[in-house]
Length: 165
Image (cartoon, rainbow, N blue to C red):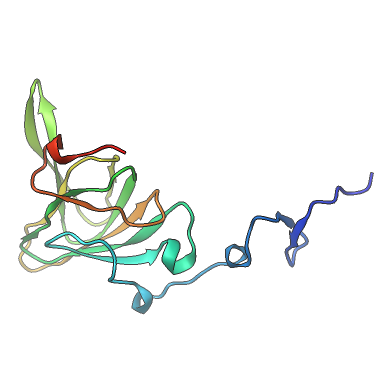
């Protein structure tokens, strides 16, 4: 039986790609540490550095980068809209703070981490990062399910400022 003709681009190994895969998405992209971008959405007390995104490598469905929190510093309260966020702790011992419920009352809850830990932040959940260590910068790698860094800075951790959509 002869092979079906599928319009599109033929890779060097002979695989035919769908026509809607543009040339930019046919190869791997390396982003060296010096290539990280500081011009991304920011929150007080921390510095986000963008590596993989729509604007850096043409990503369509994810964002990835680093966050740095200096010693003895807390970030501002914020959330990441509809984006799910995965965090990998590289260095330091940052704490992630959010409101949970104990019966009917909201309770400030801290997740204490150390290098090698992973943290999942669901969409829209107000939170902040804290680095209580005065001598060690906390560095984490972040991946999000949106191609750009969604950051909504907030006054508090409660949900009164959160708008879904």
